[in-house]
Length: 261
View 1 (cartoon, rainbow, N blue to C red):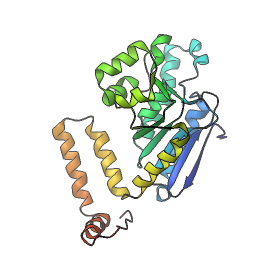
View 2: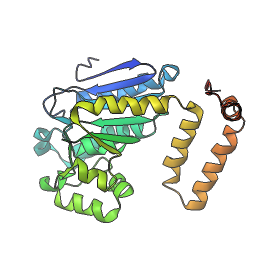
View 3: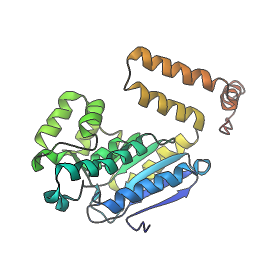
């Protein structure tokens, strides 16, 4: 399958996935399928990848400005259900990827684009970025997880405000409410994303994966159930070579050499 709308590179164990469907990078079928295919390829090459960065092309005005609205008048209830069967699994695929995923957000991040960004682990945005869930203006609600992930990130009150009004917010406001992790100058976006990715890539992959699984699973459990998940992963890591190496390196005051074992 041609993937001209989505491409990726791997350098220094960091994979950079770029959505390139300017000017607004809508989540058309080719983009959704391309992203899913790339994530599958990267998962089959985890020995080469420690961190993933997801971004939009520099020629685009958006990270992703939502779905292709031109197709909406033709939607029926059955067609909508079929559409969600391809969209929602992509977000879960991103969310459950065995390596940390950083979203570098340039420009508009709206609707399905915001839902895609929220499925990533960390979000870094350009100061010119804008965020929103404007589906209400089309007589809809978010259908790719927005009603579920947004409240988990920013709280129910703010999530309801954004979803009920459909208004756009600035990167600064998104940072204030905890929707994104950092705001940087537009020209520094990829540089800062790669700095963050390099720092994470220096950490032991087994511990990173355990942390991601413990956090993601624990969010859907009671505190006691989440603590059991945490204890399981912590105990498992105590039997790994990386844990021994990390402890010995700390005691010996040297840089650890993690090998993913």
